[in-house]
Length: 455
Ligand code: GDP
Image (tube, rainbow, N blue to C red; front, top):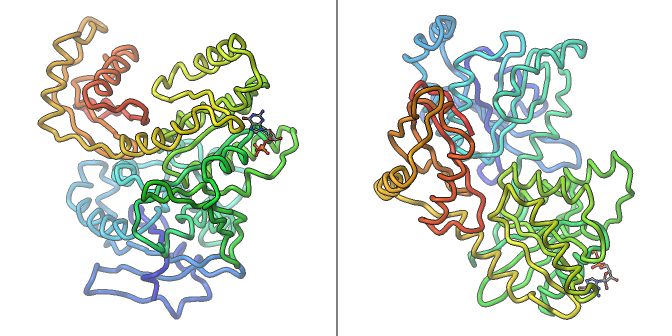
């Protein structure tokens, strides 16, 4: 039944209101709900259906006993006994899910077990929102939400019991779903998904046309969904490429603050559907605030991207150099991002774009073994020792790769607070050099032995 639908899993400690929320979300479909004792204890599955919207599955991993809940009150030590139980259920469900709704209790505030579970959810790397439940009125919403920001997930305040904000929650959940094409892949060919961002008139459509050639296929969204996305597909050297969401590319935006802000969000959303994002600037224009903002957003979200300065044929070399320098300075904190001067008209440098995008995608998937990492770490630490901070040096114990896409490396150290930003950047540069991660984003975490984390 729901096997073919993408599903979202509710994860959270006992008593935060997952079952109430589950029932709210599936309200009219209660009949479809079923218990699956043999598979995973107390796992409930249902379908969220709304008129004219894409249905999706919802999984509740609930089912922790009251005794276990009593242990929560005892603090982190009390957690130990049954954390494995919650995690086993949640992780089994998350393996099949495409997104996570991490549920917390707004009245209880942030508890150690929330943080513990959130860390596990983060490690899985699925799109996640944090649902702050039991927020019954608007007056205290901000206040109740405040402490949950530290979890690093987008927040939605709801009251499962009173139905407050459930509609908005459904919208947020729908946004976690993968683009519809992925539900029913038409072929197995390796596919590279690209997003083309940039201001109106920068030349995005011209570039897409020039890159995709005559053979392209325009795929409109399936009827019945709210998204107005249009994909442009084409093949090159046995590989399929897709420019996602190109409808947004053609839409003209007005320059008001609200619209600018919204379209940056829309841009980020499209970027999230792609393997690699292309941000196109217009060589004949100054770099806008919005372009700058987009670069920052893409960078902080660790989205793989490159910057194209288009219409190079229209500006003299010295002016182009100056522009390149300006953009380079804006990208100073993400030196890995490639910058190409191109022309959709003369085809200058166009041949470099797709191979570069492929390279970025490949680098994002790099996985390095722990042995190799630790040998590299030795070398890197010997070349430059960590500096003395507050009369001591941080000791580095161990290095491991926790995730790919983007490659995420975790250093276990005696005290992350003793590792200054500059040294962290040195470590990043060294890892990039040794493992050939030139243009992909990379995440580096420092974890103290007393478990504090610093990005
Ligand atoms: P979009 O709004 O970003 O999709 O921009 P378009 O692709 O519609 O391009 C806007 C205008 O710029 C059109 O008149 C294009 O012909 C022109 N244009 C696009 N790329 C180039 C380029 O590389 N060189 C020149 N000279 N004109 C270009």
